[in-house]
Image (cartoon, rainbow, N blue to C red; front, side, top):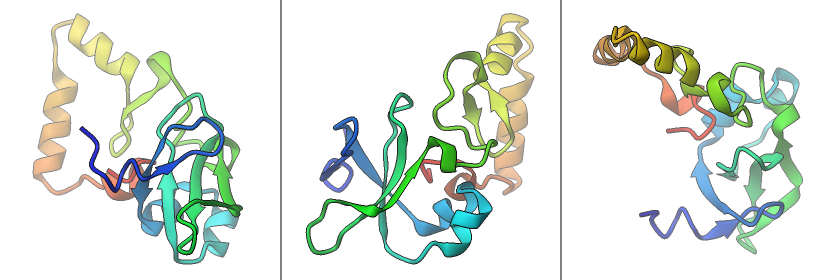
Length: 136
């Protein structure tokens, strides 16, 4: 169940709930020219893969998204690809595993990918807050 902070704002394009996301995440997943110009603020992330909006600045006065800071699918670095679906969709952004790779691994009853992810997480190599577009 989403907490109140996650469902307080709605995406202007799809109407879905915006989730809070840190500026740190945007700085890592936006294309470099946009990330360099990004200023601190409060941002929301639209998790709907069919929506063209990925991030929007939330106005502190009104609590709604502002049109001056809307970032769309084309503004995201290729490696982040939040709008990709199916077998090419990233399941693990930190280590680059796609749904298709994980499905193939499971179908072959190898399960090497979950073990590799668990090993890297235990080693402290996970960076979801900056690699995953949702910041989680």
